[in-house]
Image 1 (cartoon, rainbow, N blue to C red):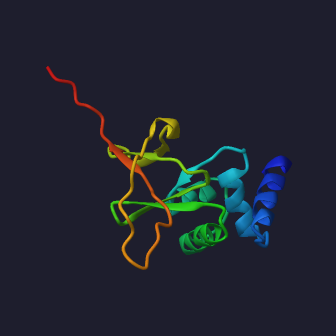
Image 2 (image 1 turned 180 degrees about the horizontal axis):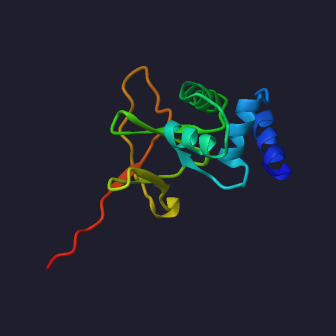
Length: 142
Protein backbone atom coordinates (compact mmCIF):
# COMPACT_ATOMS: atom_id res chain seq x y z
CA UNK A 1 0.00 0.00 0.00
CA UNK A 2 1.21 3.48 -0.84
CA UNK A 3 1.59 5.93 2.04
CA UNK A 4 -1.14 8.21 0.67
CA UNK A 5 -3.58 5.26 0.56
CA UNK A 6 -2.79 4.39 4.18
CA UNK A 7 -3.22 8.00 5.28
CA UNK A 8 -6.49 8.39 3.35
CA UNK A 9 -7.80 5.14 4.86
CA UNK A 10 -6.74 6.07 8.40
CA UNK A 11 -8.38 9.50 8.04
CA UNK A 12 -11.58 7.85 6.74
CA UNK A 13 -11.72 5.57 9.79
CA UNK A 14 -10.85 8.41 12.18
CA UNK A 15 -13.65 10.57 10.74
CA UNK A 16 -16.10 8.02 12.15
CA UNK A 17 -14.20 7.36 15.37
CA UNK A 18 -13.22 3.82 14.35
CA UNK A 19 -10.01 2.32 15.66
CA UNK A 20 -7.58 1.65 12.77
CA UNK A 21 -6.93 -2.08 13.20
CA UNK A 22 -4.80 -3.81 10.58
CA UNK A 23 -7.81 -5.47 9.01
CA UNK A 24 -9.88 -2.28 8.97
CA UNK A 25 -6.99 -0.36 7.42
CA UNK A 26 -6.53 -3.03 4.77
CA UNK A 27 -10.22 -3.08 3.83
CA UNK A 28 -10.52 0.71 4.04
CA UNK A 29 -7.54 1.06 1.72
CA UNK A 30 -9.22 -1.19 -0.84
CA UNK A 31 -12.42 0.83 -0.51
CA UNK A 32 -11.20 4.45 -0.43
CA UNK A 33 -7.41 4.37 -0.68
CA UNK A 34 -7.35 5.77 -4.20
CA UNK A 35 -10.00 8.40 -3.46
CA UNK A 36 -12.60 6.77 -5.71
CA UNK A 37 -16.05 5.61 -4.60
CA UNK A 38 -16.82 1.90 -4.74
CA UNK A 39 -19.77 -0.46 -4.89
CA UNK A 40 -18.63 -3.79 -3.46
CA UNK A 41 -20.07 -6.99 -2.17
CA UNK A 42 -18.49 -8.70 0.81
CA UNK A 43 -17.31 -11.42 -1.55
CA UNK A 44 -15.70 -9.00 -4.02
CA UNK A 45 -13.92 -7.18 -1.18
CA UNK A 46 -12.76 -10.52 0.25
CA UNK A 47 -11.38 -11.44 -3.20
CA UNK A 48 -9.64 -8.06 -3.53
CA UNK A 49 -8.01 -8.52 -0.12
CA UNK A 50 -6.85 -12.00 -1.12
CA UNK A 51 -5.48 -10.64 -4.40
CA UNK A 52 -3.17 -8.27 -2.49
CA UNK A 53 -2.06 -11.05 -0.13
CA UNK A 54 -4.08 -10.03 2.93
CA UNK A 55 -5.33 -12.82 5.16
CA UNK A 56 -8.84 -11.92 6.27
CA UNK A 57 -11.86 -14.18 6.65
CA UNK A 58 -15.11 -13.58 4.80
CA UNK A 59 -16.86 -13.26 8.19
CA UNK A 60 -14.44 -10.47 9.14
CA UNK A 61 -15.15 -8.70 5.85
CA UNK A 62 -18.91 -8.87 6.53
CA UNK A 63 -18.45 -7.65 10.12
CA UNK A 64 -16.18 -4.83 9.02
CA UNK A 65 -18.56 -3.69 6.28
CA UNK A 66 -21.42 -3.68 8.81
CA UNK A 67 -19.26 -1.64 11.23
CA UNK A 68 -18.43 0.84 8.45
CA UNK A 69 -22.16 1.18 7.70
CA UNK A 70 -23.06 1.61 11.37
CA UNK A 71 -20.39 4.31 11.66
CA UNK A 72 -21.86 6.20 8.68
CA UNK A 73 -18.94 5.58 6.32
CA UNK A 74 -20.89 3.45 3.85
CA UNK A 75 -24.40 2.42 3.11
CA UNK A 76 -25.84 -0.93 2.23
CA UNK A 77 -27.98 -1.33 -0.87
CA UNK A 78 -29.96 -4.54 -1.06
CA UNK A 79 -30.94 -5.96 -4.44
CA UNK A 80 -33.40 -8.84 -4.78
CA UNK A 81 -33.82 -8.97 -1.01
CA UNK A 82 -30.71 -11.09 -0.62
CA UNK A 83 -27.78 -9.52 -2.48
CA UNK A 84 -26.11 -6.65 -0.63
CA UNK A 85 -23.82 -4.06 -2.11
CA UNK A 86 -21.89 -1.56 -0.04
CA UNK A 87 -21.44 1.97 -1.36
CA UNK A 88 -18.78 4.43 -0.19
CA UNK A 89 -20.65 7.36 -1.80
CA UNK A 90 -22.81 8.70 1.02
CA UNK A 91 -24.62 11.35 -1.03
CA UNK A 92 -28.23 10.71 -1.97
CA UNK A 93 -28.18 9.17 -5.42
CA UNK A 94 -29.91 6.44 -7.45
CA UNK A 95 -28.29 3.27 -8.74
CA UNK A 96 -28.38 1.12 -11.84
CA UNK A 97 -28.37 -2.61 -11.19
CA UNK A 98 -27.05 -4.47 -14.23
CA UNK A 99 -28.80 -7.84 -14.24
CA UNK A 100 -26.42 -9.49 -16.73
CA UNK A 101 -23.30 -8.78 -14.69
CA UNK A 102 -24.92 -8.47 -11.23
CA UNK A 103 -23.14 -5.15 -10.75
CA UNK A 104 -24.23 -1.85 -9.25
CA UNK A 105 -23.29 1.57 -10.63
CA UNK A 106 -24.31 5.11 -9.84
CA UNK A 107 -27.13 6.58 -11.90
CA UNK A 108 -27.18 10.31 -12.65
CA UNK A 109 -28.92 11.91 -9.68
CA UNK A 110 -29.68 15.10 -11.60
CA UNK A 111 -31.90 13.11 -13.99
CA UNK A 112 -34.03 11.58 -11.23
CA UNK A 113 -37.19 13.39 -10.27
CA UNK A 114 -39.48 12.13 -7.52
CA UNK A 115 -42.48 14.42 -7.32
CA UNK A 116 -44.32 12.87 -4.42
CA UNK A 117 -43.91 10.11 -1.88
CA UNK A 118 -46.77 8.31 -0.17
CA UNK A 119 -47.54 9.40 3.37
CA UNK A 120 -45.87 7.27 6.00
CA UNK A 121 -48.26 5.20 8.12
CA UNK A 122 -49.36 6.60 11.46
CA UNK A 123 -46.49 6.57 13.94
CA UNK A 124 -43.79 6.22 11.26
CA UNK A 125 -41.54 8.54 9.32
CA UNK A 126 -39.65 8.08 6.07
CA UNK A 127 -36.00 7.49 6.90
CA UNK A 128 -34.68 7.31 3.34
CA UNK A 129 -35.62 6.45 -0.21
CA UNK A 130 -33.42 4.06 -2.16
CA UNK A 131 -33.83 3.99 -5.93
CA UNK A 132 -32.42 0.99 -7.78
CA UNK A 133 -33.14 0.88 -11.50
CA UNK A 134 -32.77 -2.62 -12.92
CA UNK A 135 -31.19 -2.84 -16.37
CA UNK A 136 -30.58 -5.60 -18.86
CA UNK A 137 -28.75 -5.34 -22.13
CA UNK A 138 -30.93 -5.33 -25.21
CA UNK A 139 -30.63 -8.33 -27.44
CA UNK A 140 -30.24 -7.43 -31.10
CA UNK A 141 -33.28 -8.08 -33.25
CA UNK A 142 -32.60 -9.73 -36.59
